[in-house]
View (cartoon, one colour):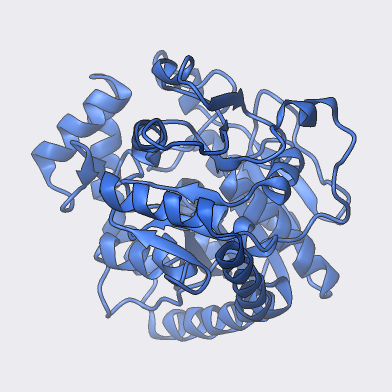
Amino acid sequence: MRILMLAQAYAPIVGGEERVVESLSGELVQRGHDVAVAALRQPVKQRDTGAGVRVYELRSSIHRLPGAQQDAGRRYAPPAPDPETVRDLKRVLERERPDVVHAHNPLVHSFLPLKRSAKAALVMSLHDYSVICAIKRLFRHGAVCSGPGPVKCTLCAGSYYGPARGPAMALGTAASLPWLLRQVDLFLPVSRAVWELCGLGPDNDHIVMPNFVRESPARIRDDPRLAELPDEFVLFFGDVQVDKGARNLADVYGTLDDAPPLVLLGRHYLDELKNRPNIHLLGPWPHALAMEALHRALFAVAPSIWAEPGAMVAYEAATVGKPLIASRIGGLQDIVVDGETGLLVAPGDLGELRAALVRLIADGALRARLGENAARRARRNLSADVVIPRFEEAYRVAIDTNRRRSRDGAVT
């Protein structure tokens, strides 16, 4: 098959979604497919990492508008067609002539005006809640949002993006959803929670498609930053912020007696944690180095209070055979089997979190058993050999759906 991935960014820009697109593209090439990636032009040059994937950079108009972009190091697609992006993407489609366009969230909007002429099936992965939530997180006032509403979405987006950009983002998100539902041939939510919380309903075709993790060919053992790791430690990695549960974890950890150090790896947004005893804030590390830290940790913790869609930390912990203490929320519930591959706790329940930490710190045999089970389950359910054929079948389903819709005149 000829497959075109649509992603906001590509390597060397690193994030959970970018790793999925890069890994999936590489695996598909290895299985004989012809794969290209179209991504927004970013401040850094994007490139194929050696997997044989052609990479196209798309210009955009929105980032040049005053106040339109909040992140100077990264550009994002709006929930609406961008004129320059549409023009560049049209040229890519004419050159590539894909059988399937696989979109990864908001860049899809610049493809929708081109779908009929492209004659390609459209598959859309849902890595988050962006189809119904302008801020993508479906998280409001410290809890999972009950769903979209005109007033609350405008206020929420305004507080997140600012009073000029926020209302436009909220309006664009709401207005684009009916168009998406008509044109996407198959949705691929990364977890049951994403599909259920998006509320897209049983009438729209979808297949829950978990992420997968490609194991690094070799561990990193000689990087000088590894000397910052204690001999024994518990690991949290990801953005160190409130909705990830970092503050709750630090508060609980401070009540433990004789606990090994807690290492926090990731961009930190909570300066209050800098001087906490027995807590090491090491900042963001390259992904391969963070995986080496995971190998060395006793176990990992993901105490999120928001509904993590796919939770790459859970996949990665399982892949290297480490148990995970995780909140019973979002996509974490799809990956962590309580008492079998890790321990699940109620989100925001500090008592349950403390009890789980005490239990796993004290019981090495339990850690070993849970870790072995996690690795075994990951090989059985989450390996590339298992997941990639499911993507291939999803593409075939989407192609059949697109042909039927085109024949019946359903795509408008």
